[in-house]
Image (tube, helix red, strand yellow):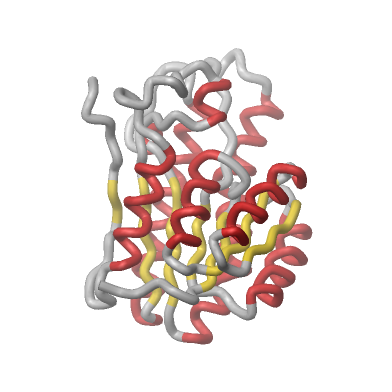
Length: 239
């Protein structure tokens, strides 16, 4: 198994939920971490927690759907960290409504954030990984990217597209010793899921927790370099 100590990671959407849990799990493994998001106060609090675990930690405030900001801020984070080995594309938004009823701007913003944001960030990080001929990219999709349901057209469309982009990228960069993994978790008790009314944060025994997701990522990264976790779906044991 690989030792992750002193690796350098960028995690989008890292101030809460899945991103924060992953950042903390990385720090416990000795990984230096940069987190991104739109709430500076929450990012600062996360960085403080990470630093208490004895690793280098930094943050950047930007919206992944804005390519100009992504270009500037990713360059800054790579400089601050002194490089990058791991990218976790976690930032995303969700809203539900029928195709006919959802506002066009809201539908478009979900695609812009969940798909184009992932593309923008990956496009800026990838040259660094190719140059060093190694790296890890974890792309977070969803079970909504495996099956569409009523009132999830925008979210499902974005997450289906993430799977296609991620799997294509995986085949492009294997020759560069870069592993790309696509994750499709079912409902996890994150703040976003609770706000949307699809998860109960108090039901820890029956609902997946962000820490479960983080453990899966760490386990995948620790695999010997000869092995690659191409994709994984994380489900609760409870129906």
